[in-house]
Structure formats: structure tokens, C-alpha cells
Image (cartoon, rainbow, N blue to C red; front, side):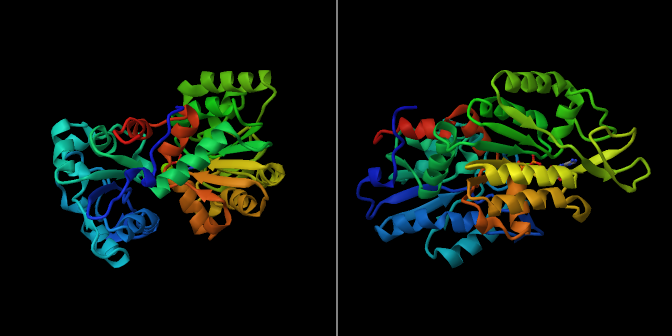
Amino acid sequence: MADRIPTLDDLGDVAGKRVLVRTDFNVPMENGVITDDFRIRSALPTINWLTERGATVVTASHLGRPKGQPNPKYSMDPVRARLAELAPGVELLENLRFDAGEEGNDPSFVAQLIDGIDAYVDDAFGACHRAHASIVGPPQTLPSAMGLLLQKEVEVLLGLRNDPKHPFVAVLGGSKISDKLGVVEALLNTVDSLVIGGAMCFTFLAAQGNPIGASLWEPDQVDTCKRLLDTAGERGKTIHLPEDIVGLDADGNFATYGVRLPDGAKGFDIGPGSAAAFSDIIMDARTVFWNGPMGMFEDDRFAAGTRTVAQAMADTKAFTVVGGGDSAAALAQFRLDDEVDHVSTGGGASLELLELGDLPGLDALRKAPNA
Ligand code: ADP
Ligand code: MG
């Protein structure tokens, strides 16, 4: 932890060198067309830093889940075409996950990747929580560094973890409940309060003894939620849960409830009272981390809670950080993505860095020969 992670300056003179840059070009696509090139544009500062100093840049990324086999559906061609427009002359290797050696961290695949390469740069924050070949392999032998994007992510997220301005509020939602309970536990060490919406709230509401109808929940996590509620109480922290819920009744009609849902009712968003209360908490905070939409915002009927929270993130004077693919998509949908201080490019990686304070990719860079 204490050892530093080498930065671009630690690569020395890169003129005339071939530098492998591990980027996160895992962009959303529909019918072979890129629907959002944010991740490609995010890699440009590092690519330009290197090319301006005379390096030849070779980029490499995964795209989708081709499961270790070539698959035209996950070809890098559309990304390569867009990259050629944004950064002419920069190479891009084929989808790393076309080779099982990537996810298997196979030394022979690492050797193939770094053949003819003089230095390595990791700018793929969204993949740093995976000990895959392209993340942990090259720094074992090559002079290595984190790129500018990765550096910013690490500064912001470790800053939140180690030295946040108080009150520090974490707003959590979304549907990946068990995946995220670990970070709830870790966040109780640093936050002053937690705000929980999205599908995640129902397992907590159930842990408090409320009937939750047919809402999405994880029964085997009820005990964990009970323990987290107790732990928060013992440490003088507050876990704020919704006081009202909107959704569909057993007949499929739009309905508003308190926290006790009738049989067959499904909660799909926090209600207006909860949205206003959550918004006030965000406005009064000095640091806010938000991960996970407050409801099924893809459906207009259930977007209001997420929209209110997003607007509060934009309006508050607090330092605001948003992590998570769907949360970032919600912000973009409401055109508020420029109104927060930092939108993380990594969902799982941002949660794991907050939870554990380190990632396999960062650890590998710290052990590089030039570190
Ligand atoms: P992120 O990508 O920001 O980490 P998740 O992947 O955990 O967020 O969750 C996002 C998904 O959660 C969205 O597709 C949204 O529709 C869904 N969701 C949020 N609230 C609910 C709910 N009450 N019921 C069902 N799905 C929900
Ligand atoms: Mg998601």
C-alpha cells in the first residue's frame, strides 16, 4: 500500500519506443455500432501524452464476453475505426478475450502480448480488479506505469476512502445486491451515513420486518442486512432507507405505497417523499459517492427517484463521485454527467477499490522493475 505506483514520468524517455497501453474500450454497442464512445475518448490524454513524446502506441482491450474464442460479434473493428478518427496511427490489437490466456493469466499469452514491446501502461481502470494476463502480466518484466485516466481514478477513489470531507454520504442502489453488500460494510468505516434505494432497499426493508410483496430481493442476504443495520447503529452511523415506494400492484397498475408492500406488489422506484429526503441529505453533505440507480430508471414511470438524486448530485456543493455503468448511464440520460466532479469508468473496480483500498492491477504496477 505504501509503495508508490509508477506514473508516466517514471517510464523515462519513450521516444522511439513501442508502448503497450491496456485501455478499457469495452464500449456499449448495438448491431455493430458504438452507441457511446466515452471510454475511447477517455483514453486519449494518455495516448497523446505518449505520442507527443515520440512513442509508438499499441493499444489493447477486451470487448464483451467472447469467453476465450474468436467471435466476429465482439470484433474490435468498430472500435479500431473510431480510434483511427480520434488518434490516427495508433494500433489496436484484436479483442484480448478471444484468447483464453487473457482471463486465465497464461504466461505464454503475456509473452505474446509483450513481444516487441518496450514499456507498458495500464489505463484500464474498469479491468484493474481482474488478475488477467494483460493487467498483471506485462509489469512483471517491462518498465510500467499507470496512465492518466487510471491515475485520476485512483486519486479520487482512494481520496474518498482515506481522507473524505465530512459529512460523507454514500448513496447506493441498483440490482446487484449481494455483490455490493461488502462495500456497504467497508463504507461504514468512513461514511457518516448511507442512503439505500434501488432494488437493494428491499432486502434491508425485509430485514426490518416489512413485507416487500414481489419486489426484487435476496432472501439469503437478510441476515447480512440485519447485521449491517446493527453495526451502523453501534457506530453512530445512519442507514437511510426509503419511506415510500412506487411500483406496480398485483394487477400491474401503477401504485404508491409506504414501506409495507401488499402481496404481489412490485417496488420499482423510491417514492417522492424518499427522493426529497435523499436529496436533502445529498445537499447537506461535503462528499457524496453514488453507485446504483434508485429504481428501474430505464422505464419512464420509474425514473423519478433516480432523476431527483441525480439532480441533487448536480446541485450540491459537495465533492461528488459517481461509479457504476448504469448509474453513469442514468446521469448521461438526464444530461447531468458534466455536473458531477468525477464519473468513474469502472463499476466493479470502483467498488472494490473503495472496499479493499487496492486492486490486482495496481499491485502489479507497484512491483514493476522501474517502480
Ligand atoms: P450500476 O451499474 O450503476 O452499478 P446495477 O448494475 O447494480 O447498477 O443496477 C442497475 C439496474 O438496477 C438497472 O438496470 C435498474 O433498472 C435496476 N433496478 C434498480 N432498482 C430496481 C428495482 N426496484 N427493481 C428492479 N430493478 C431495479
Ligand atoms: Mg450495472
